[in-house]
Structure formats: C-alpha cells, structure tokens
View 1 (tube, rainbow, N blue to C red):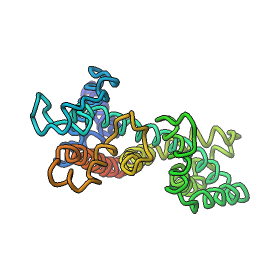
View 2 (cartoon, one colour):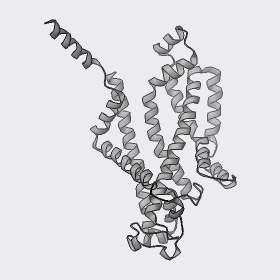
View 3 (cartoon, one colour):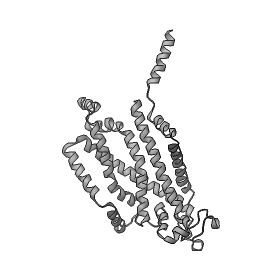
View 4 (cartoon, rainbow, N blue to C red):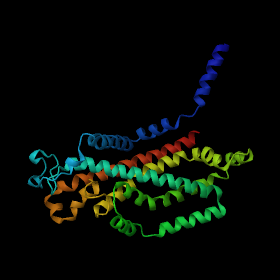
Length: 303
C-alpha cells in the first residue's frame, strides 16, 4: 500500500511539471498545417541554398557566356534558363538565395543585439538615462533611411556584403530598442525584480539573469519575424542597384530584370523564380512566427 502511494505521488509530481519551452514550440508549430508546411519549406530552402552553394564555385556561377545568353526554360541544359550574360539562373538563384538569407540573418543579429542592450538599459534604469537614450533613438528614426543608405553605398570605398550589413543595422536597431524597452518597463516593478534588489543583487545580474530569461520567448518571436523584413530590405536595395555589389548574386538583382518590360513579357525565367522564392521565404517565416507567438502564449498559460 505504501509503495502504491509513493508511486502515485511520483506520477502526480510528473503530471504537475510544465512541458519544456521547446516541446510547447514544436507542439504549436505542428498543430497548424500552415505552420507545419511553412517550417518544412524553410528547412528545404535552407538545405537547397546553403547546401547547394557548397557544390558551386561562385566565380564560375558569375562567369559570362555571351553565346548562351537568354536561353529559355530547359534550353541548352539550363533548367531555369540563362540571363543576359549566359549565366545559369538556377545557380544564380541558389547563390542569391543564400546571400540574401545570410544578409537578413546577420542584420537581424546585429539589430537584435544592439536593440536588446539599449532597450534593457533604458527600460531598467528609466528616468534621465531612459530619456537620453530614447531621444537618441528618436533622432535616428526620423532620419531618411533609404536616401542615406543609397548615398553611403555610392561613396564608400571597398564596399562589400559586410558593409551592407552594417549600414542596414545602423538604422534597424532603433525599432528593436523600443520594442524591448516596452517589455522591460513592465518587468522592472515585478515582485521577482524587487526581491532581487532587496537581496542585494547587482543591476547587471538582475538585468541579464532575472529579467532577460523572462522575455526570452518575446526575443525569439521578434528574431524570427525580423529576418523576413531584413531580407526584404536587402532585396529592395539590390533591386534598385544599391544593395550587394554587382559581382555577388542576390534575389534583388534577379528580380531587377523585371525593370525591363521586355523581360516581364518575353523572358519571365529571368525574374519569376527569384520573386516566387522571396515570396515563399517571407510567407513561411511569418507563419512560423505566428506559431511561435501562440507557443509563447501557451507557455505562459501552462506555467
């Protein structure tokens, strides 16, 4: 009888343990058909772009073959045709997709890191420090981002992909700082923060060991949703000719072929695959982001 009671107590204890954040996340993703398809699509795209680029030589991909220019769908052994320089569209799509996704990920990393630290400090300390930081944020946000980026891309020497990442991040962190500041303001008066202050914990410890873990789900959601937006910014700049250097493939440069009306009607293979890929990437990321938001809400309910 005693053994039965102990065993039952252990089962009750296990039943009371809330599921892990990872388990809740995957449960919410695979609960929705749209989110499941979106998640699988992202995995396939990453494998095709990053995995496929390992088998391609970037110098040969961008090598010009005038005699093979404007080959159509499936002509001369080119599945998706060729561009005006005889370069294979499929290879350019793989390399360009990888480059655009990588730019989006790096910009997101820089913006999230800077925005999180700035928002954490402004929201936690408040008062004069918060006012000074937010006035700086306001000033950066009112600057005309696109014209400044175009001018800097034009005048900067030794311009490369990393330069583009830093230029986009120079403006992108402000939105993240405001986003995280709003969460920190709602957390700093909570009981666990006041208890940590009473126990003598340092401000740095409270910010990074107490408050930060409590907004981890919000950080993950914002990171996922920000990636698609940053990919769009890079693509837009490359589309108008002020993004990645011309010798580096990008989804924006491929979509840029649609600037010519002749290409829109008679040569859809030049711009259509990149347009579809960009649309699929952004929609898939947004669907996964929505599932993560539901996972965050579910975790709060179950905890």
